[in-house]
Image 1 (cartoon, rainbow, N blue to C red):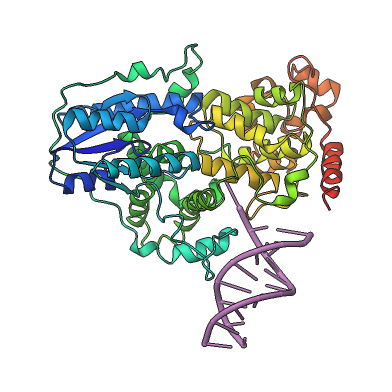
Image 2: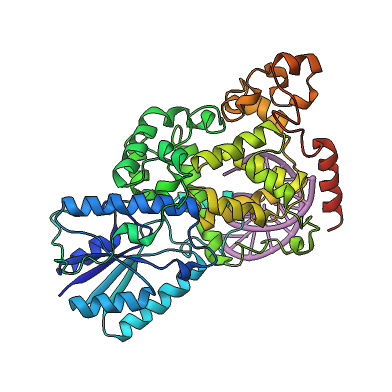
Length: 475
DNA sequence: ACTCGCTTGGT
DNA sequence: CCAAGCGAG
């Protein structure tokens, strides 16, 4: 007998409930990965995510090799591939950890039903959330739409949350056909644009644990203050590791507890609260599965977005050539590293949806393709929050001012100078608003607007007024 | 990734 | 009365 362990976005051996359950069956465990991006359409992994996935699979495969086995890799339709592997091995059970993207949920439900009809034992497990989306409900049994109420309820249950112990002495099934090589999945970019990703990240379970440990030891204490500063390494940068399940939130909570007895109190509270936002995002995606494309607030169905037929404005935003330094810095950080600081994400999103009046879905699409941590739940929450149409959203009329935000959160200009080096010689006074600099100052700084750095593509004050006017039409 | 005040439903 | 949850800003 064999128990199949179907890896998906839970690319770790620690704190892995599906592995624990497969092991508990007493049968040898066969680790499998099935490449089936067509089953996730239209939210198949983007280019940056594929880059990460390639390396994370390599890392998992290496860990398995150290333990005397390998990852059995195939591609095709997941159900058909699982049945093929069952036929080849005589496996009697299949275990996996749950995902919550709407398309994947439908697929997994159908697979579970089909495999059980085949006479197999088939179980899914929770590896990627502290709480199942259906466990946290209002007193009326409804899903939450407001974070503070959601988290007040959920946080009370934190003391019961524990990771699954790392499995020891696993008996692996012997693999006769090793299947495909990871390279056969063609996840890597064909043209060579990934040097910045390579320099910024180390995918894999061991790297995830190292990142978490280093963050908690060195930065947890200051997280509450530093997390808003894109010029300071104050955040955990764990998002891609969490997305691919190289570390789970339960292990992360346990590691946090080891440094702060009560994770709902300082200094851990602000960080654990962010993990709570990740939970809230999954809660919303589960209960409102249409939100990756549709505004949660139906009032926004008729919002007069400016659909730019030529896409030249969207193109300038993609490339970080808007002429607004904080916005360009964020977008260039994204393009170069596959990641953007959360403060910058809010700024570039506010600029796209309010100053340019382009639909938030266009921004979500770009993030989906370029972020190494692209996650349907978090991306949807973030964009709808900024656009003002989502749960617990910022009011539409709150338009971030990227100049004031720059002065407040990048006070020395280090973030802008790093990502927009052509502005580095400008005095701080003009760094966040080069269009206001006198000609002599620009000359001295060797900046010619329109040549070295763009003129601002919109006037911030005027475009803000246009956004407010567009909002008024919905009333 | 907030805050406040109102409504509602339960004691 | 209180407190949960939401919607407006």
